[in-house]
Image (tube, rainbow, N blue to C red):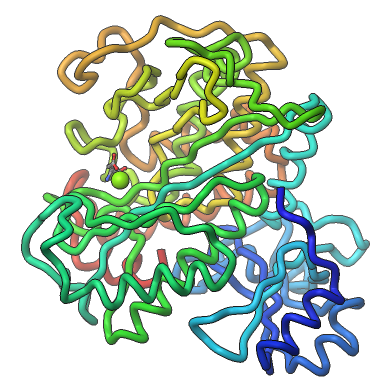
Length: 449
Ligand code: GLU
Ligand code: MG
């Protein structure tokens, strides 16, 4: 794990880079990065130790910043301030916006308790549960997005998957994205053209669960900002065009043994070892409810269709891209892990990772057994595996009252559910077709997902 730089290290880094502004940040309920910009002198004089305040309304914002109904955060309660306290282990200086640095904050309510709706706190609780069980989660997310012209037309009209010859016209922009991500401390592994016109994937190395979630929110923000610097746009809408590939957020997890740090999945050999077996069984048990965290609006649900490399049913397998849980089980490998392939690129990283940890740990604690492994084309023959919800009402029904919702905490889960219901009500009026993505969806989701 990375060393956690103290505030002094951050101050030295800011001085060296000529930083004038520090951004104090927290993801909202839908995963949008929010916060405040502070002049650097004031930051180190006051905010670094004392934090700052922001309206709790950010946690009930919908896609366009309308306020969804909520029993805890509302006009009667007064839309209270919450307290953002910098977590200096997350601080970094940007290279793509010289003069700016960013630090993620922990969010506290007016009683000075961790704010129960703040997604970073929801994730911190699940990491803590894993650590109490002697396991330290290690996570990588794999994000896809479309690079577009302003107006959301794709930058290309053809597909050339992983071509190193094609698409040189956008390579300047992609190079700057990789450099900007590296500049912000994200370990870029590689990028490649994906299977859609203008679709791109950039892979980042694994990290501890909180760092991975923070990095993933930043990834989206940085990729969008660099696209704009090039006169382009990047979108993480899960389904931009009805007939083209969707954009996913695959989430890879493994567990480092709290004593020694070895990968607890390492002894899996051609099939999951016992602890991986329980972990995957937990993901399978909670898969219907997990769907809402991975597809929180109508658009995401339209990504879940056969022959799209998105799982339509609840199953697991080895190196098979049609299954929901793809298990990497190489003899004695420290790289053994479980890839959860269901979530869309618009998933809130802190929330989906929290939900995966909650589900997997539940599998370990209850020693859940795995159903038979799936092999071959799981779209052609899903056998007797259960289908995943493939529309928003189905995903909402699966999450409401679920034990997953309970594990994530009543305040957070109620807030998440109410936002999804709010999106559903709007979509029922404006985008009623079960499969087709229309202009209303693109206008609502392309820019902000
Ligand atoms: N684009 C697919 C998705 O929406 C994933 C393709 C892949 O396997 O990389 O999840
Ligand atoms: Mg991909």
